[in-house]
Length: 231
Image (cartoon, rainbow, N blue to C red; front, side):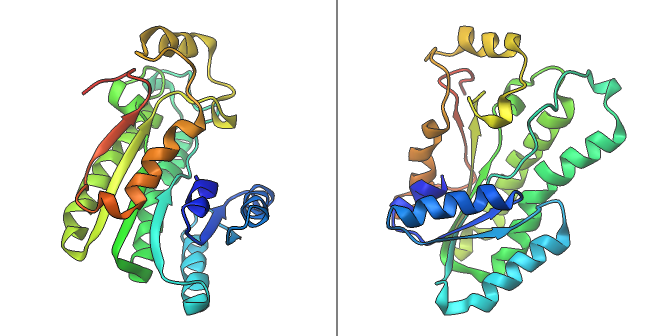
């Protein structure tokens, strides 16, 4: 998504928990002729989010105005398997701090820096639409992102800032490496498009929702899952 945004002409700030991953992405963008920098960010830590906002504010005109925000940080790897009554409170709270509170916290701190018009894209999950079993804390956190998206869209519409969410399906990526085989099989059987989902399948919609042509689209949740869920 960061590389696609850079290809679309945006200057990109890659805010990433793992500094090596963030810098690797920023280097790839620069190598392709784009503009990017990597900054550390832990969305579960209010001080880290505040530091990001302070860094961007201090950069000012040198970095250009903050136009778009893609909230993509989340915990997904190894979170499933237990029924809702067996999930530990600490595990529940950690997942909520990252997946549900994180997007709100980042948007809260970056909103004063955003241009009008502006764009916010939240990455949720179709697991919240499907009601996936043995993932109660995860689907609750992603359901919160869907509701947050709608609430933010109502509040920011008159300011010219659109807020939308994408709900990807089970995507082949590092974050889903430990997902049980039976869940992969469930998606394979029930998708209208049976091939495995790739991260690249999201890029066109992210590009659209960040762009000028989406100026009258807000508060929407778009499932990108090959027709696994249909609404």
